[in-house]
Amino acid sequence: MKLLRRHKTVLLVLGIYWPAIFWLTHIPIPAIARQSGMSDKTMHVLAYFTLIFLVWFAVSPYHKVRWNRSKVWLVLVVVVWYGVIDEYLQSRVGRSADVMDFMANLFGVAVGLVLLSILGFWSALLTASAVFIFVISNMSNLLSLYPEYHLSTLFHFTAYTAFTLIWIRHMARRGNWHIGLGSWLVRSLAAPIALLIVVKATTLIFDRPFYWPEAVAAILGMASAIPLTFIIFTITRPKK
Image (cartoon, rainbow, N blue to C red; front, side, top):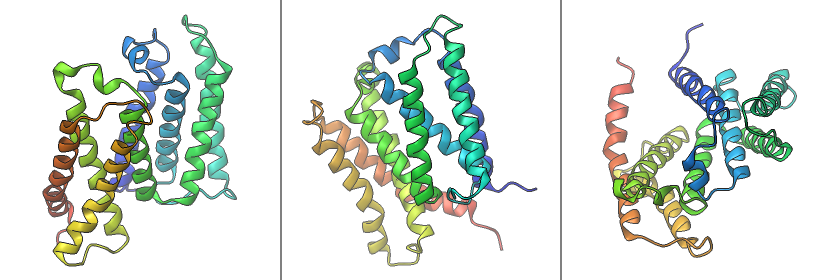
């Protein structure tokens, strides 16, 4: 069976991600994780939310979760048992097996499957990317750990570039590609700007400082996504 582009990409990312999280959970807890300021349980939820997302679309890249199909239950069993084995093995390498960590894993899996039963690939990817941007920006200290490398500025630029590209692809799937250029530009930037406003407006709630360079980097990232879209479209467009 010939694999299409989306399927190949998901399999590649899963092939990197799954071994990576297995390795990270079987070594001494990295200093960056201790310094991140992010709850250990939040990390587990995000890790397994991402895992179930990738596993599902590796198995069924073009369909939503359908609870009356055996495929979803097979995926659920595989990921849940992986979580059990993962926690057990941690107790054999000097780390602790924590029931609450396992429950956080299950919560991430459950949230992911519910989301995937409602949304298709691009809608789910858009939602997941927005959640990750919000969590990293407002619920962790990761962006302030290495100020000498301008990590925060780099994150905002790349994250909002990626989010804008996903949003544009989502719009194209919904038939919003063949409209006037002005209307297309407004729609292309509407969701990314709205996300930036929400993230920055809630900085006070999470006791985070507001830095203008981050907002500027995010806006530049959105702007860079526009020409990137046309480059990607030109490269990937089927030849006649």
